[in-house]
Image (cartoon, rainbow, N blue to C red; front, side, top):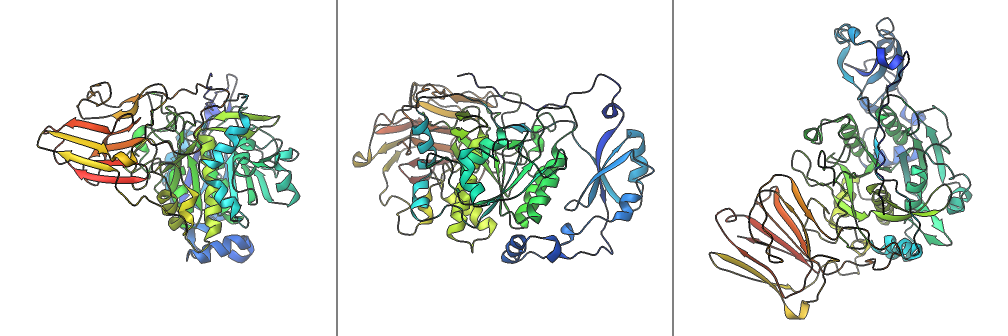
Length: 571
């Protein structure tokens, strides 16, 4: 299957152009002294309830309006002013580069930031019909044990989710969303491109994303939060020329907060057209800082990790997925049950774990015209967002970061992790006290001497689980040793990756893993630090690991995971 990777790029006008002479900036002011603000008339009741739950001030300085006199003071120095952004105490302006120094010298201006002239990348928009649509639709829910939520009556009722995307055509008439319309679950919608209250236009990407949170086809859910409430924001314009949609995203975040969003799904990312990889450090990108600010206000932001895993010029996660308090979601392939090679890798530039969790990156969605299969972390993210809404509904006393950590802990690999899968696919059983979380017995038998390290699987726990096509998957960064399968030698050529058996090779949807197969995961790294390597092995023999120990490995930590059991050994 050809996987088209849609990029949204700034196109310069060839004729006389306003954009050629003027640039877009965010002018950030020093204070909000003297500003009057009534939170009870500004915020939705749900927003007030959420803030009180998290102990967050109702009249926090970030929520107060930007001073109008400060905005007016720019009138002689800029061509025009745009949106005022409360969270960042600034206003968007269009002006010639020559005026920037004068603006910076104003006593009430703290900083001037230039908006990047690039649009966000929508994380996957490939379409294809399959004969196994029903099986895939069911598997994308079952793989996360979503049926346990549904049986318990946890369907997102009372949870309010904002979706920031490129448009929602068809949501106002498609049968897949009839239950949402009938129950008046769309609380508000806003087009931040046209500044109108109508999002039922634009690119169908947002429609597909919504379907993976709450869509229903012939009584079969495509997502888990089918009874949630929604705020729909169109922030990305994929059809026309123009400056960055980053401003729209920032404004939509404030709008979602004001209107009581408890969760936000953002299936987009800002990457190499605007930033360097070193900027994916959790603090550099404006959208990243905004994602963290949303978390401080009690909002869980769920963001796609990105589709740059096979792009040698980038490969890593994008902003705002790099934010410490934004839940970054990677993609796994249903036919291999390991990371899809195009799903962006972690860690963040400052070596934090990313992605946090994973979900199916091949999914059935409702598009504008039909039920279709799509690929991309764009769809792993809403599947996880719907899961998160149900988990939060189960225990509303959790704070946003308590929920964040619980979602990580619910990952089937936890406490094991790597930079391709994070903690793995969240499992609903974690949120039910009556269901066992971990195996009781240790299935891994470790033996070693000064030169050799061997791991066997206990005979009663052993089961063959070969990866489709070839035997293993892994990363290579800095260590050399012989791999037990095929005697493959890892070299030290920087950021190179081995990734076998990834291809989507069954358009009929046969061979989908609805449950986790019994692969053997392992990683090697320094204690409490960055992982040097990590692997997934298709188990064929009881001896799953047999490696020589040289000076480069001594003192390193070997972490292993098999059938829900994680073991850690110092080499």
